[in-house]
Amino acid sequence: MKTEILAQEDLSLAIDSLKQGELVAFPTETVYGLGASAFDEGAIRKIFAIKGRPADNPLIVHISSMDQVSLLAEEVPPEFLKLARAFWPGPLTLILKRKGSVPAICSAGLSTIAIRMPVHQVALDLIRGVGAPLAAPSANLSGAPSPTTAQDVLEDMDGKIPYILDGGPSAIGLESTVLSLVSPRPILFRPGAVSKEALEEVLGRSIDLANPATPALSPGMKYRHYAPKAAIRLVFNESDLKGPYTLPRITARNLYSELRKADRLGVPEVEIYCSSSVQTDPALMNRLLRASGALETTAASKRAS
Ligand code: TXA
Ligand code: MG
Image (cartoon, rainbow, N blue to C red):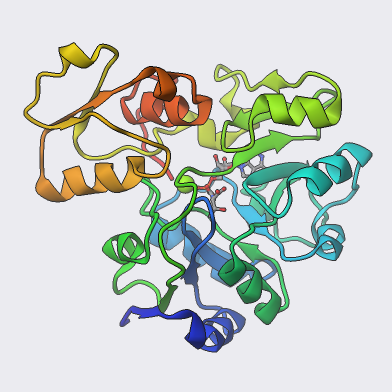
């Protein structure tokens, strides 16, 4: 299959392709996603096959309007509405109880469903055009850093999907915050651009951090995400940078593209300086610790998406 990068003017080709059960990569404000129509079981199967994604790692479903929530979720609790009002469209994924009509494979068999309304206009136009929510993990091969440009997607998906929609470089550069609302207290599964404090402020109560010792709650936590081929060494004093390959000025926006660049160059080790502004960004530190292997749980020598 020939893979083509499409400009936004050619959106209709991407829409037709998704309607016919093909996969299309598309831009969001966090990272690029690999989309399939959420009610097309065969297309979702292709996502797992093409990425090499473990069958127990569930997908996020992307919507373009609030009326699509009731297609996906069994119940819509008041706290969900509060958070959606405050942070959607945007980099927040909320987990609710899954409706029986949503293919179980979408959630890797879990009784829950992860939902997000992205703010990127191309993503919203695509979902509207298809007329159905889109299930989409990050558009990388399982284990590789998430893609933040159409070119990054091509690096991993060339020959595997018909189209990559180009929406420019991702504005945020790290995956969305993931919050579960199915337990008595909300649980933060993945830190992202929407902070724990901002969520607590809107909810008016504290939320729990997911316990990495019980990864079954959020299967993605047990895999070594975001891992480049090079070994990562985190350095906390600038004067300790030895080289030869160093990244002295990492940000949320440039982390994944810098890791991809290092892998293209084939360097064996990357030293990353964690300045105080890096250290105080929980989402960025989470990805750095995972990329370095420091956050792996016992089950996590496996690599995943
Ligand atoms: O920013 C993002 O969230 C990007 C863009 C494309 O929207 N997507 C993304 O998807 O990062 P993915 O598949 O790479 O990561 C989804 C994470 C995984 O850690 C997965 O385990 C978790 O969300 N997840 C999805 N559904 C879940 C569920 N029902 N229960 C618990 N965790 C879930
Ligand atoms: Mg991913």
